[in-house]
Length: 191
Image 1 (tube, one colour):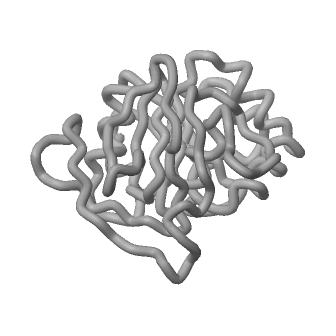
Image 2 (cartoon, rainbow, N blue to C red; image 1 turned 120 degrees about the vertical axis):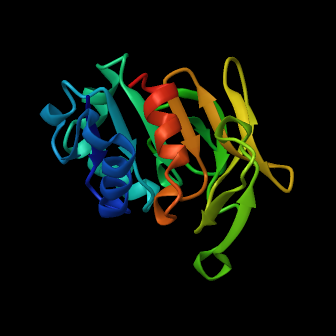
């Protein structure tokens, strides 16, 4: 199995490390910087960072078109990556892939100085709480169609799955807990 991590901006190294540990010897994890590197991937991670910048760079290098041309590609979007997956971004006119039937609000948990950690109860990961790291995190404000809520924090949706896509408002790569990456690989991408 080949898994790519979009390497334009954001938590690239952290996701590479997390995915390599979660995948083990079942495949390889590579950086994706050009459109042609998308072809042949089973899964792609769109990391956190600045969503406007990530979107502009995806368009500039044709990565957006390459991703949209691969309907079987499983995608994990964390923080800004979740914004890239959404059909609608509240209050902003910016690019997104529009692959998930969700709406998001950028920076809904506050700015950089309001970053925090919280224990999340994610049933698909088991009984043990998952350590959520929230940095300028979005909130998923609307979930439609076949999209399904997997986790909430204080009544706000922070994790949604829709088929081969997983949108995560927090940063699982910044913890030593690899359960979410394994869930993505095994259940969403079908590794």
